[in-house]
Image 1 (cartoon, helix red, strand yellow):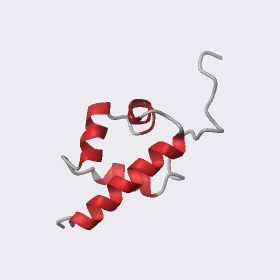
Image 2 (tube, one colour):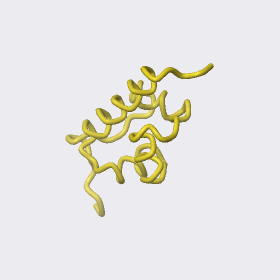
Image 3 (cartoon, one colour):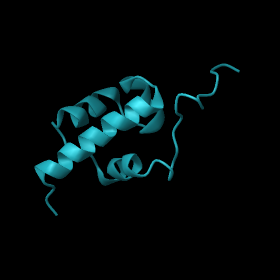
Image 4 (cartoon, one colour):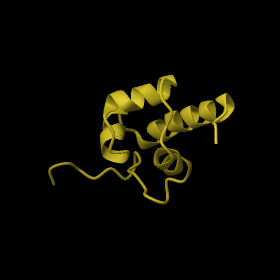
Length: 78
């Protein structure tokens, strides 16, 4: 099924929201939450490449595999 420009724009906006909610940088969110290279996330955000289904599902329903948010980040090195 071909994705529409509207659904792609919605996914990009939702990814931006999830990154902001996490309180992480784009780079840290890419690596820690989505297990992707930061350049790949930048390509998603720019609309240069389509997000795979698994990434779209994770950003639509973060409770499936919750990532840290500003108040729940574990202390590194402890």
